[in-house]
Image 1: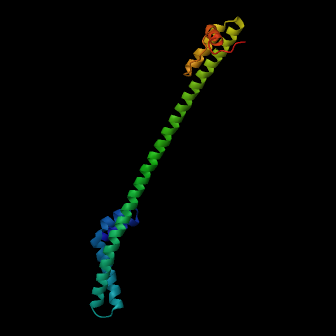
Image 2 (image 1 turned 120 degrees about the vertical axis):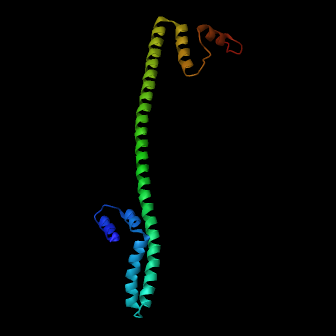
Image 3 (image 1 turned 60 degrees about the vertical axis):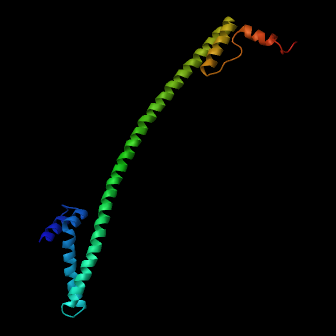
Length: 174
């Protein structure tokens, strides 16, 4: 009767397969299989009692083996589903984090490029102004500031430096 209640709960969807096997228990399942195989054994071996005993032992053995393996497979499947859901949740969180980080990186690059564009505009504006005014030293300082911002140090930083290079030792004499 207890087994009938468990079967009813399983059929109606109140419990899943793993819960059914756990509640039915090995002894209930073995008893049911043993009874079924005892009947089959009695039909297959028409010797009184012997057919039922042989069938009952075979049924009990098979039931024990299938019960243990079936319960293990169902538990592993249930755990695999839980692991899958956890992995799926972690992947979605990682995707969301990557989307957020991408926006942040794009914003950083945009700010960087905007800053560099402003620096270039200022540089060319200063160079144009200095050339129009004939301010060669200011022109050299502007170029050197720009190069210094990128880690370069130019040899010529003024008109005097240019004269020294042109007129210095090893220079070309015309």
